[in-house]
Image (cartoon, rainbow, N blue to C red; front, side, top):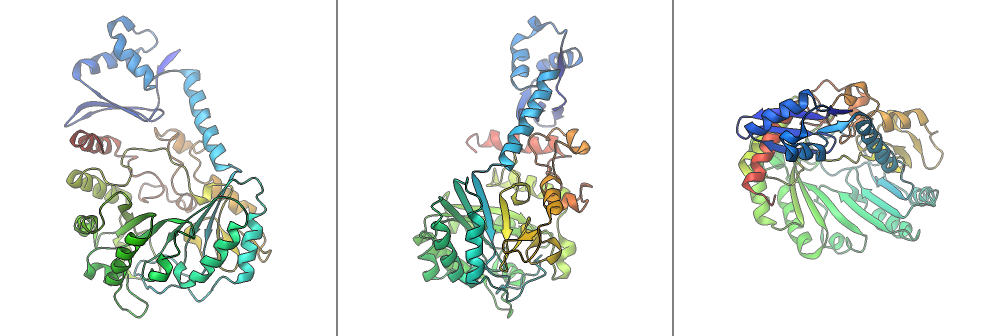
Length: 435
């Protein structure tokens, strides 16, 4: 029996007429008034509809899974669930977010790491990291993300541990999140050799805005030094650079100017410039300026309308989860302690185990992290048109019970405002079909 898919959203756009979206196929169709009248007939009686009235339209609806057989749709959902399960439990890949130090040379106003300090990874813990990786004999790919604190405060650890990990004989791909202040000539000259193919650095706006928010522990400015280092980095390094601009209510209006400045200075597709979201922190009264999901949604839509498609996905995409949802993905701190989320680094309450036996493994916490945001088991998520695409949002937010529509991370920002979101996307695509 054929039915109208529960993943359909049919709505009228103020600018583009009727639009039909299906979350199972992730397809979007623009529909004229005549076709809409026929679709209403089909939606009312999809199993008895006279296909001869509009065979082309009917075939199109079948192709985008707007019309489905009952059993087929459930099978598609089960298949999507199986594919995600395979991804989450892939035994051939190991992802290690390595934190060589909890120390940082910056005192950012919104930093969420409450446990910073002079804790550094020893050579003994380096060896334990390698021994931990050796417990995964089936891996064919090793991905390493250098994180902190500020990882470049312990650049020698990065060099030493990379060499040890290379001896495993497994292809290694590395990336790094750094504030960029210590990216001097000696560091830059070794990045390719270390296999670091992607680096993320944050520039929070103009010199005045950035230096107020992201200053040295001593209070000194940082923007000019960072940009000078990036200039040199672009000349000597062959990887991809992600320039993140953290936004909240205090600096969102300056994003366009910052993006334009950085794009002029760093043209080309090797540099991605994207807005980030301040998620909270330990330090300042600016925390009440954080954007809620609806406010971030407004920001993104306004930005697309002004500038066209940006580097962040605007159309719904298939989510691949995060470190917390993958079986072979871990965050390892400088003492050898293990976490399931980057935000937890340094917090003893969220340690899930250790690579050296100093902390017993907390299997229940690991399982909660991995399944907290499972969109296939949550009754709320199962009713959502995005359930086969979305991984349920941020597990950390789900575990905190923050699924009331305010958190940017608990659900996708387009959830409640899909018609407007897709309308803005369509406008941008019509303006620039290559975007």
